[in-house]
Figure 1 (tube, rainbow, N blue to C red):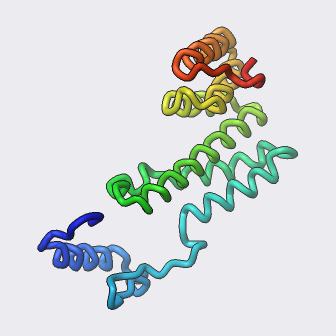
Figure 2: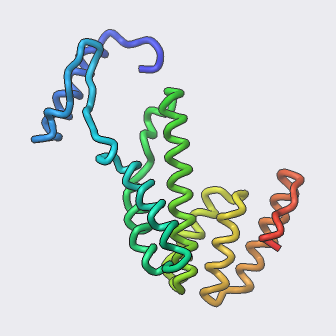
Length: 184
């Protein structure tokens, strides 16, 4: 509770922790009871975010010489996201900051995945993902560039050019800025 704790908070917390222990099974010993609350004892390597960062780093090293070899790593990293991260806790400032960092990591992984697939000649497998990334943040230029590349690589050059023109117009109208030379 980020503000004042309700009267029923202590009992609700105990109930949730009890249920969590049941779900953890043999790993329940990792959930420690402490004087000031509970602590889940995890090795950083056990965290999805650590695994995702490692996979991204390895894929980035491999991608320039072997984009097809980097693709499985990026797909594995991308698959670690199974929905919004801690969406119901973002009213806590520290958690909101962490969630934004993880969202940026997810964007980086998705951009790398799309770029690698394009470089490996697998544009058709990521054109939908590129469209989703652009729709999620239509003023983010890397997403526009990746979508344009994916569309062009799948034989949809007119649509790619329309996407670029629409972006240029929207960017100018909403921010007064011009796109980077890469978009030209």
